[in-house]
Image (cartoon, rainbow, N blue to C red; front, side, top):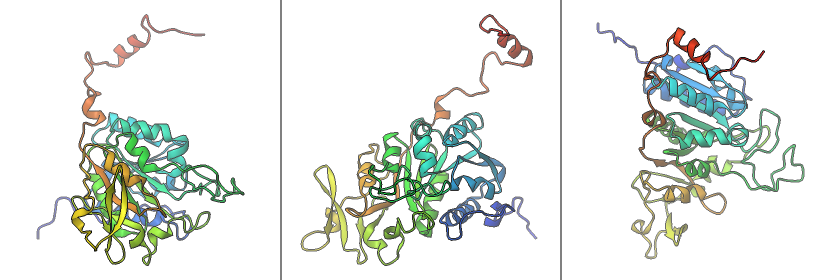
Length: 338
């Protein structure tokens, strides 16, 4: 009998014995299950995989993955992940954050991690509310949204997470919905395979404090009319009857109905490998209810990572040993303060 040297892992191999403490029905469960399936499908080594989180409901993620994990302070997960990847480029480093943790106090760290093209994978769970701290508005909350900190309705415009990632010239940008298994699974697989900074916004429902905020993108009866599933090289067609599409209009996109002289040849074709961020930005700019929203991979380009561009951390010349390090610290350029 032939016994494989390395047994093929199963999703259960990536599960821990920790009780999963999310509210029943939370979309985080779906993302967790898909992540375990994806890691099993690619044969990811648990000892080479690390999940880093900040503060929020999503921050529990590392506890439920049978890999290495770090639970950082609020907003600092990208900084921790950057340092880890810099010193251990052999590791697969994932960041799990939320719209509050990642786009509020952590926005600066996130922006620069993506700008540097650090080879880390960032999953941002977006439920448009602060869930862990009991229902205050978040950077992605929408105008008029009533929360515990905006009882008369929010007056601010939301942060568009995808446009922020594209502004940082992130080399991989995608969006998915927690309950859409096919799209989410494919996006996570491609995220794992990408070399460079990857940013994925995941629409995720908080049924306690902001229930139904993404129902237009989740409901099977309405989803097809409000979402464009992106396919590289394919025309952007959508609708329950696949009779609508996106066409270039000036510097933007417009919705047209196929027929009466309009064919798929007239539609915008998706090019996720375009060097410019222009098309991806137009797709990220589409927002419900005025336009259908883009799902899938908006951008996937190759460019040097931070590790590629910097000298190896073990390439110091001359190498510093224990005595040399002490001598350096006690040299002429250091001070002792009593």
